[in-house]
Length: 517
Image (tube, rainbow, N blue to C red):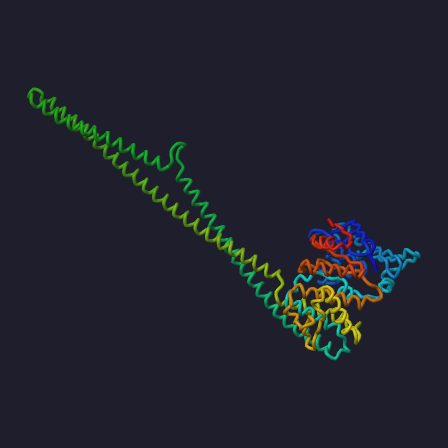
C-alpha cells in the first residue's frame, strides 16, 4: 500500500491542507504543534474511521480531541492510495450527524461504501490493533529505562502464542491484572493525598490573603492619621508650626520680663530720687504706685504667657508622642505585611509544585500505562498468533536488530521468565544493562518484524511520529539506511533537521513536506 495524496479538509487544527507523498521516504517537518501528529491521526482515521465513545469517555476520545472548532460539519477529508496494483480514492466525513465513507476505484470506476467491509478486504484485513502495534510507531514519551525493558517483555510475550509451552498467556494476563490493581490502589491513594495537600494549602492562602487585606486597611488608616497630623502650611510642617508657636510665646514672655525689670528698676530709682526732696512726697508716692501697677500688669502677662508656653510645650510633646506611636505602629504593620506576603509567596510556590505533581505522571501511573499497553497488545493480537509466530518474530527481530546495529547485537533472546537478552556473538547481555538508545532500537526492530508478519498480504506504510529523540547520529543513520533498503513507503515526522541532514549525508533520496498551521 502506498499513500499518494492527502487532502485534509477539516481535522483538528488543520484546514484545507494538501499533502502529496512519494512512494519512498517522506519527512514531515515542522515546529511543535504544527500538526505532525494530527496528520498521522488523520491517516489512521481515514483507514479505520473514528469511533465516538459514550459518557465520560467521550470527553477525551479521538473524535472529541480532533473535532474542529470551526465548521465541524466538514469534519474529514480525502485520501488517495494504491493497493494491490489499483488506485483508490477514499472520502470520509466523521461528523456524527453527517457520517459518510466512500471508496472509489479510480481504475474501473467501482464505488462502494467504505463502512461495509470493502476497505478492510483491500487492506488485507489488517486490524486497527495490528496497525497501532506495528507499523504506526509513536514516541515513547513516558516509558523510560526499566519501564522500557518491561514494555519489551510484555510486547514479545504477546506474540509467543498459546502453542509456545514456555509462556502461559492466561497466567501472564492474570499476573498483569493483579499487578495493575496494586498500582491503581497506590496511585489513587497518592492522588488523594495530593488533593488533600492542595486543599490545605489553598485554605491557608485564603486565610493569609484575608490577613493581608486587614493589614492593608490598618496601614491605610495609620497613614491617613499621620497625613492628618503632618498637615501644615505650604512652607512649614506641623512640627515646625508647633516649634514656631513655642518660640513666639517664649519671645513674648522674654519681652514681658524686660518690661517688668524696667518697671521695677525705674520705680525704685524714681521713688528714691523724689524722696530726697520732701516737697515732692506726693509725686514720689504716685511714681511708686505707677511702677507697682506696671509691675503687676507685667507680672500678670508673664504668668499668662508662662501658662501658654507650658500648654504649647505639652501640646508639642503629645504631638511627638502620637507621631512616634503611629510611626511605630506603621513599621510593625509593614513588617507583618512583609511576613504575610512572604508566607503567601511560599504557599503559592507549594501550590504550584503540588499542582505540578498532580499533572506529572506518578511512578504508579507509568507502571499502569505499561501494563495497560501490554494487556491491550495481548488481547488485540493473541487471536491472530499461531504456534510458530513467536519463533518467527524473534528471528526477524534479531535479523533487523543485527542490521541496524552493524552486527553488534545478533540475536534477541527471551527465557521462560520473560527476561530479555541480546546476543553479541560472544556473550549475552541482559536488556536492563543496555542503553536507552539500544532498547529503542530493539523496540523498533520488534515492531517492524511484527508488522511484516501481520501485514503480509498488504505491506503498510511505516509511520514514525518523532521516534528518534534518543538516537545518536550513528543509530539514526543505520535505521534510515535500513528503511531505504526495504523499499517501503515511510512517513517520518520530526521537529528537527537532523533526520534530513543525515539523509542528505547518506545520499538517500526523500521528499520533504513542510507543515505549518
